[in-house]
Image (cartoon, rainbow, N blue to C red):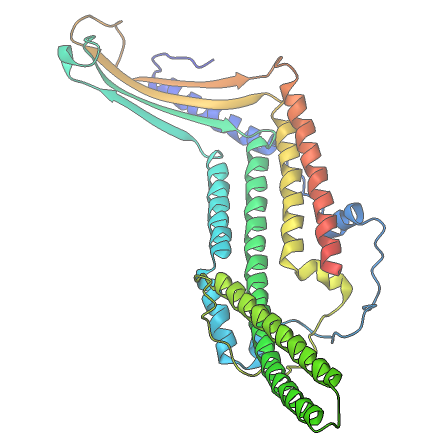
Length: 386
């Protein structure tokens, strides 16, 4: 419990020295935070039956590092401009960016609990003030929880890991949107080329219908040949409509990625760019280290680990140092005779005794969340390998 008394200057100095000594002792005795499992340990738990080969078992990929802006190797200015537009205006990417900012602020808020809180209460005005008590003066208080067991630091570490996970998710979304833009752009261009080929085939088939009719008229062929030629024309027209629909759908998907209204009005290049060569892939073991979605899953495991430690530390007593300076006077009645202002120093101890096993249940919940994060890492890792 905090004490409130008039403290002589000499005793104030002794109390300050004692508080400093106590603080140094607490800091020295404070627990060191345990480190979360590294990527290798998480992989062993999440993917116990996955044996990575030294080289890729599926062919088609080259060796070497993957550049950050690989799409530039197509040397197409229109594709580059569309990717930049999507990154600037895509709605899903803006949501991911907002989540990153929110996670960073949450980490900042969690770290604020490590510092003392200082509050000031002041009032004045004499007989007509407030409740009519005539009290006037000011109260300055400071409270600092000693994070002896690491509860606050574990909370800050969990928020920081969650922020890192949100940043990796944003990077994964950015790369995915760039890839989807390129895919939709290629599909629209490919459909346009196929439409041109289908039109040529349709014109040729229509010429065959005319030829079959002429042959039937002069008696060289019969009407069956004409019917077959006309059926082929119908099939080619149907294929042409399907290609036109595919091109419209690809352009609308592209416009949605760009943050535009899907009116199928975007222009695409009439020809596909040159093939840039094999896509570098590196080694299978490097995949889990560089993919942003895998990194995000690993950071979520770390955040869950810190949340477990935070929940365990919440079952232990909390210590806090308090200090205050009070100066109060009254115009209506005489306060107890004492020097003014009054300086108070003290300490608080809060220990949970019984709360219906809520704290134990919270630890179990955090453990379950950690197991969920590990399982999620395994799912993301297998998706990365596929």
